[in-house]
Length: 363
Image 1 (cartoon, rainbow, N blue to C red):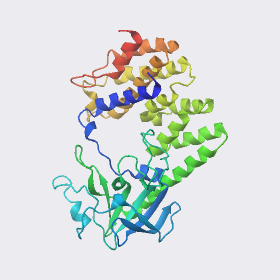
Image 2: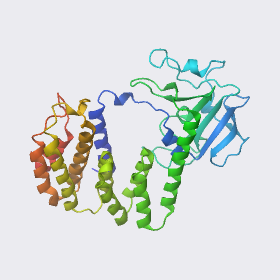
Image 3: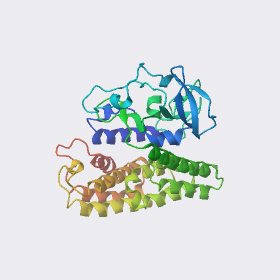
């Protein structure tokens, strides 16, 4: 099985396990970090006379000039009228949701995150998706222009998200002031500038260290983009990834770091060492766990245990995929400990660690 397909299968399996009943109901939502990261243009717009046409009143990022006219059919209000956004966004849990592009009036403003026609997003979960070269695109790769826009009316910010799952993508209050929104945008743009500098660095060692610093940032998009680039690199990137895998502050990301390492010339001894760390952890952790611990919100160490589970699973999968025979003694030691651990769920139907051990040990 090729590497990309294997990763997609594994991700889908874990998602099904964690969100068995909810995954199919996830809908596109405004994601500030992704919009700020991928946008070639971030502009503040005011409605013009013609519906769906806007005037640029401020440029936060990009080459558009204040006063320029933008035609954005994806933001053409679906209805006329003077309905206030506060009324349309009311009653998230009970009233009929407002899912269409809302009406805008004089005095209203929109902060819109755009990609120029034909431009690729810097990072996206689906790099295989086609790019539209005919018009402005949403900087949010999940959804249309509704999920790449913030409306500002009477000093309140609004976006389109999915406040309940299952449920539709609907107009909602953003619960962030305009000042907070602008600070968040600038914070992401600062990291994006750091990414651009790293990519432009011709020294592979220095570049890999700059990318590692982005993995250690608190921004999810910066981390994912940096890992994607480290995965494509050579020996300096491999060394950096091994260092990141030893960083316990990144424990929740270790499975993705392991995915980035898979396929690189890393010895089985390295993976044996990391798996031995898991053996030591679970030999103690399992003593405090009860059946059904995966969804036991009352267990204070649940998130740490979940992160170790995904780390162990990724290590076992990579040992199996890469046929790392030198790691097999560590696999057997881990299996002996794992066999005494309680089930993740009360009615367990999926245990990816157990399945990986069966593949490796043939039983």
